[in-house]
Length: 281
Image (cartoon, rainbow, N blue to C red; front, side, top):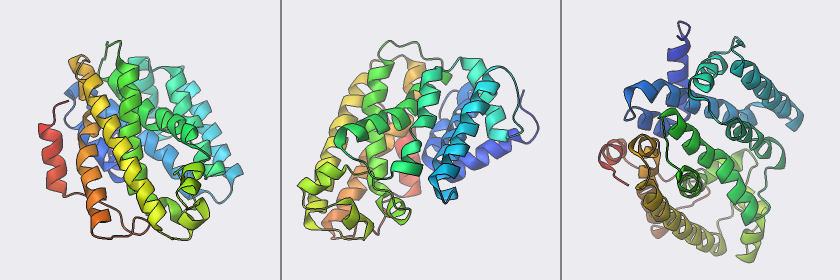
């Protein structure tokens, strides 16, 4: 049982920080919904660290606090933090894989310290350890037994995570972070410095077009793998349903000459709801 107040705090953090995953949780099996919201709130807390600290060292202290809180939570100890304590119940109830949880925390070191993605391979690893891990953990909470889960999560994490990074370019730039690989930017005549300066060159626009194609390819591949999973596992991949409409919104932004470094491509909330309610892998 959760302590009084935990549930509402977890729901509030999840819905305010990651409304898409929070909405997807509402379509999951009833017994898994609060665990999915807890995972979502945990991820939101980690992601917010980079915006809340002024120095990398302070961010590392917070990440270390979460590492220790997770270890204590696995042993049944409480930390006095609603999300950490709710996470403890989820960890123990579903025996969530420790390496995936630890990787989710460790990946946020990029957000607080490195801030400039060096190359394509580093981006792939980051997406696997963040968005990909979230799919694996969510599927585990839903009772997944499928052997193909890791491959489906890798493709889904790339598609969903990359789409999200492209949408969030303006927000990340404000905080001095560039998730587009430096080597690819330079090969297209741009650079992290240009992105941070708000310079949306033709080269950058062309590269974003190529990334949208990669994201769409990963989305189709993810759908193929998700369709082979058992029903509990498939329920955890519902956020993937928004990749296609978000990519369409990004493409529409490009066609009308919008600025990808100043405008966030979005979709109608009713369409978002309809997409989740009707999507099938």
